[in-house]
Length: 497
Length: 96
Image (cartoon, rainbow over all chains, first blue to last red; front, side, top):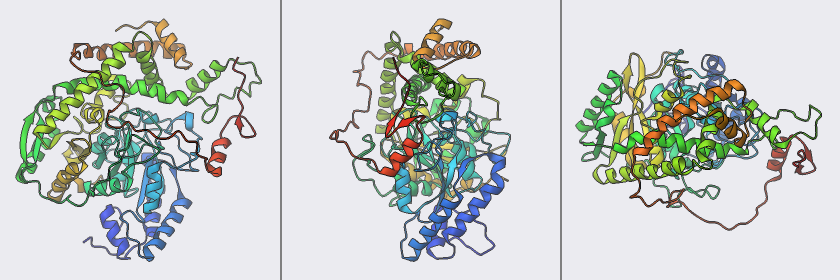
């Protein structure tokens, strides 16, 4: 039971502890919401984690939640304040994808997950910063300024869901939503000391998520505990008629067996991953974590994933290819940035030139780089050599995971080889930045569920370990993470912010 | 793999992107380096693999091709943002 008195601040609240207090009527959603809104107002100039803050709307949603609680409703997210990555649509609210192209875009409808969170009574506080169109691993490519890491303001929070990670870590909300295409939830969770969960592809609707790589994009939570991630997933998961890649089967109860012991669970550890230039503290932390799992009764088995080294080159063909197709809809005519050709008083202007002006003027360097790369890979004469080959190797990677899951129940890897890097350190070396995703991309290409949970500190900065399970076996991931967090305190460590 | 400046200009045209000379130089170098790195895929033997197509085999689903109407307030928000309109239609320059 969370001990609460009126001197307590709400910083430490998880979804479960806040829910208990709300249900016991010791606090109200309005109090919680005001607390977090004030914190954002007072402190976010240091971080730039949030692009839009919804003062009035959040308070009216909180009042509604309090009404529902007083009428006896008891949903776990009822009255819980959260933040949403700004590539997810909220009706009537600016949704920018951190791009000049969509700087003034107002979403006409709600993403399916926003509808579900609204029905559950969660209170939306605002929208968080990201790499432009989620293209990046540091949140430095946002058109609206970079986001800082609360653990060290000279460092990046990771990306592309860096605004969401930074905000949860700084206690600006109780949980946040991000999107993950090749590690964009897990790597920032690792850099900011959070639990960050990427569901299986097809588990959560993408309707209303601004598409990046449609074949691997997934929405998922950034939270303070693995249990909180399971609670959020429970609400947002499931079939959606607006996204026919979602699975029709009923969503299992993710909390039912979360606390079951892990005796006899077979954990695979990828031997060659431990030699991929890990910082010494990270390597030590991962090995110590394995000992903890062993002490809980799990069985550690050495495995090998030889095809994983091809995951980054495969990803950097498939992703830009899909990006170039997905972003082709942005022309500035129906919505988005317009070069104001009308203002020039010309009517005979070449139509193609208008597109080129609007796009060339409003997309940032990384977005253009990906569009160029993808257009090249898909162009006549190169399609077989690049895209088709990449899809075939992706299939190999998928098969390799499927075979491994005959031998083990889950795989544990580092979430990242290192802790958060310095702002500016990698932004000009795009290949090095792409290698940031080395542990994240494999599960994305294979559509697998994976979580990053805090596993220690190295020189005062957090790092995470990643737990991966077979497709749609989210329960296994939560079960292991829950057991680990029950007997460790890494997830309770906070930045001195 | 080396990529020529002409190729970059051709791709920019296909991608409908205005690029200045500095961008053209940058992307020529950067794409060259990335493509060189990606060349590692050549060593992977995939001839044993029956290529399964472009999507996950387990997620293809179909639905009836039925038109459904949008709520009026959503239409209003969407139309509010077009650069030019006439009644309920987006007005653009002549194409030809």
